[in-house]
Image 1 (cartoon, one colour):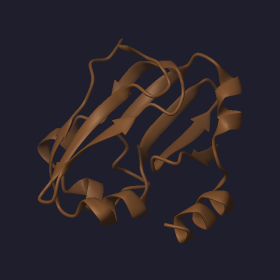
Image 2 (spheres, one colour):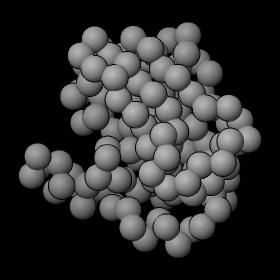
Image 3 (cartoon, helix red, strand yellow):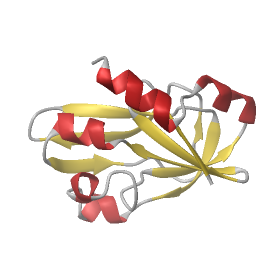
Length: 123
């Protein structure tokens, strides 16, 4: 499994033709305590840059963007009942959606872990 990162602070773990998407630890730390998560319907087609989910915290609401094109094949329904999981395990069990990848070429526009860490240091 290979993990990529976006400048919008999403991570994307690729396993074959499936991509699991969540937000980074940096993103959850900026949001504060997450109190609500809204997920898309399974089967929804997402285009790179589309809203893939909504996260609300005690500080603000924020969108989670699709870093690539794909079709939603699964959502993490546990986050709806326990949104605080986003703060507890942002880069693991608190993923938002799984997409069937439409264009693997779009992965080239994303960063690897070292590049993402260097990017965060500039913020």
